[in-house]
Length: 302
Ligand code: MN
Ligand code: MN
Image (cartoon, rainbow, N blue to C red; front, top):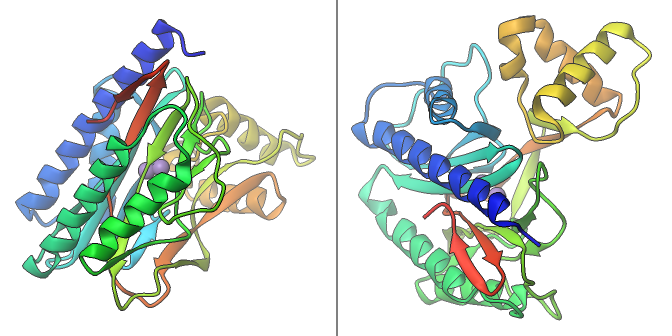
């Protein structure tokens, strides 16, 4: 069950995520010359300003980069003048998470895919109710996209959300799925259809070795005293939510990157490699978080 008090925190997180995302979209649309790093940090600062905490590092996916890309310290990639820019924002209030994303088309050739993607998410949300199979939402996504000549990405899904747990087990597929589980009362889901072009593969692949986002994967003491100190610091700051070494660099400098890499190598952290469309085709994404409050469906990020 989700209590009224918990619902209130989900709703607060949703409002903050929506505002921070709109703030980011405004910067992208203004076509100001900013780096991805500046944009991510401005959005993350906005979240804190509004009384939330980032539930994961701000993701900025340009073109074929579908997910898990957050800028690192010292990087100087600028927002592109053309293409698709995805901003994916996570906020938590006391561990209660909102996860939301939009895509900004920076050239007219991409305005249609973005509009269709918006429609796909709307239709999926419109079909959310207690008892519906999640595969039905996938079927709606796939068919709506296909009707306009687009593909949904088959190996990226929405996900169940729980307190301090961004990926809590159940998935919302973006393609039809046989005998899938049903949506139940008092569940929270992030629903996030990704679209790509008809000539794309419709799948993403990992860029091995390009890891920018991590999370605690096991609770076990490290023998190395300093690494153990870093592991505890990560646990205290982020619990099991995803984080980036960029956030630790203000305190630990360059050592933050080395230390996190070492904890990852030792299995204390799991890493999320950058995901790109297999054929290198541009990818669009929209995402909202919905709370199933009894029989009521509340979109916290709308
Ligand atoms: Mn997201
Ligand atoms: Mn998500």
